[in-house]
Image (tube, rainbow, N blue to C red; front, side, top):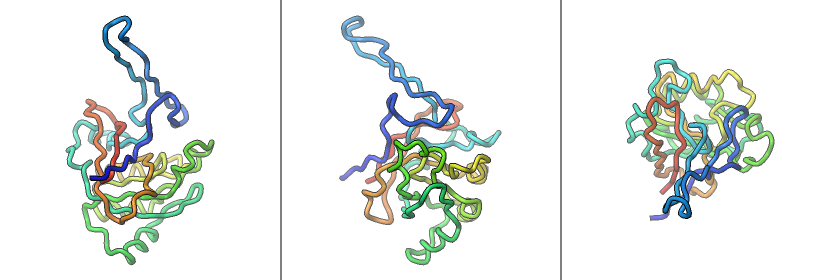
Length: 213
């Protein structure tokens, strides 16, 4: 079985949202002092490649530990879009894909490959990323999809400060997977995805090790 890693590595150099903590991996114990090595990690639950639980934006939404793990193991539909800065993915983008590849079944999971993750080291990575328009988010809700992923740091565009897509999707219990990478290496429209979060009590999200196979 060939495995493809779709996750950013986590370190002090991992790009983070403005005002979010910089990840730290801190030595806690060492072979020299304690006969074993051990680290302490300090990071946001939305560091690197991560999943958003509904509670991230919805007051009574599900928290990460309350979500059935099977929702993170899915056969996924990959929608390719070469998106420029602040590109707003529309309902028309999705329906155009459906005209070519067939209707996206209700309850499916989809991932948008925009190519934006290639800009991960640029200053505008967080401020100009592509994301979903309101029309696209509402179409996804109408489809009752399980999960929506993207290779940019947010499902909302960088210029959208009201987080409209987040609110629409999470209010309807649709999971959000952000900051994927290496999607250009996937050649098929469908692939198997595993993106399991940590079982963190009462958390709004979690870093994941996302893989395709």
